[in-house]
Image (cartoon, rainbow, N blue to C red; front, side):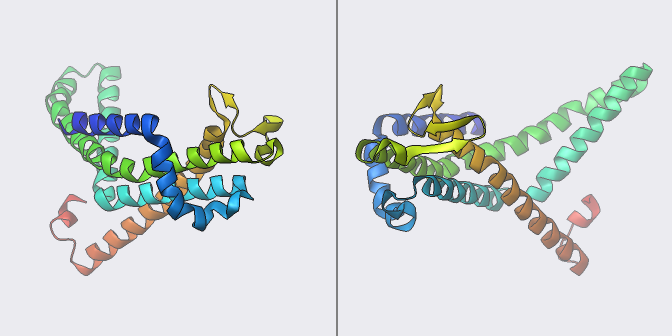
Length: 216
């Protein structure tokens, strides 16, 4: 149920973006325009900074609302369990297969619990991501309507020149955003995870980790 609720809320927010992106983007422009708009003089830089801001905020929200140490531990346990089950099947060890199958449901339930926690945070993340995304769309559309065509042309690895407001299944600026945000998001996520793990290790060393010492 939490998973379905999170998906429904996210879908509703996306529909709002599709139908009301212009007023939402215009409202956000009063805040983000003076900060990273640069009076429409550096459109690509603005797009990159908006992607960076969106990725940072969503990653930080997920890190704050999710126990990343517990999540990582569950993933390791599930991976080790699946490896043991595969090996038992290869060896045709019926006794071991039976025992592992008996606890498989518990392992899957634990994994689903972690996924449900992530889905609960998705609507919160979307409340941050969607307004910024709406602003990017509004910003690019305004630039396309008021600036020379060359102001939105950039060089990319797959072409000598592309128009940001052009389309290739999706708008070109969406592809540029993805190329910028994914590696940055991975880097930020790794930095946050490293910080959280170091913090938890310090708690364990100082004895404030409590009962988790036995679990780990």
